Image (tube, rainbow, N blue to C red; front, side, top):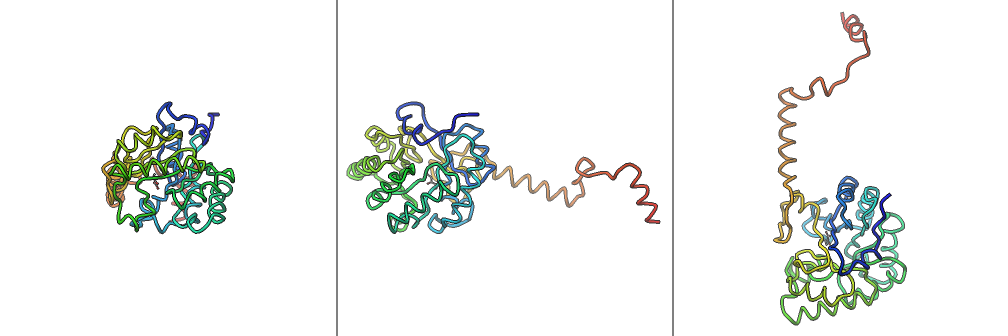
Length: 280
Ligand code: KIV
């Protein structure tokens, strides 16, 4: 039995080998990510877009997230499963935030949650970590703030904004975060935050200076085309391969080439002859 990756193991790996994280939303993809040896699996609220077909992440609910986190937890035997807290599940108040975060560990098998932002979120994050719930922070482009930010835009492009980002990262550490995702910020800024923060930074569109990287499963495998951010490197074209396979299946059904004898069942010895007999 392999040793499970835990939040303390991730926190302690600062400055060591690079950490790998991928999103997953169901049992089969979690199993693949786990077998591939990824350190962390994030059940991202990006599932609103890549799985449920919404234009942004705002509408996904606690119940939908819980459903997918349960499936991922069944597939992940070793990787740390992190549940993304959906929009408005931690914004309104500290009690709500802690109760909702707790549900992911208690009812769905996650071993950490992810929360976007600092500022007004800090008391909620401190309360979660105080309740023994490991929290992964998320700064830079925070998609749940899309209405305020006016779109999916690169953040912290000025020296002043970079300074504020570093201050936010240190505030997240103070609130107890075991690691911090940095999304869509200039590489030099992410490297600076990584130098300043005593916990690992996990970059997505944040250059090579972070302590680890995270990408969306559907982006890595070429399964989602609606949005193709510059940082989302494709390692396979499974969308194309899947469509070709489905087209071949349709053609073989229509031509009668499928199913062949190797896909069909035989009756017990002598029974087919009896069947023909009764037909006469
Ligand atoms: O929801 C998500 O997939 C994320 C990652 C992009 C970090 O938050």
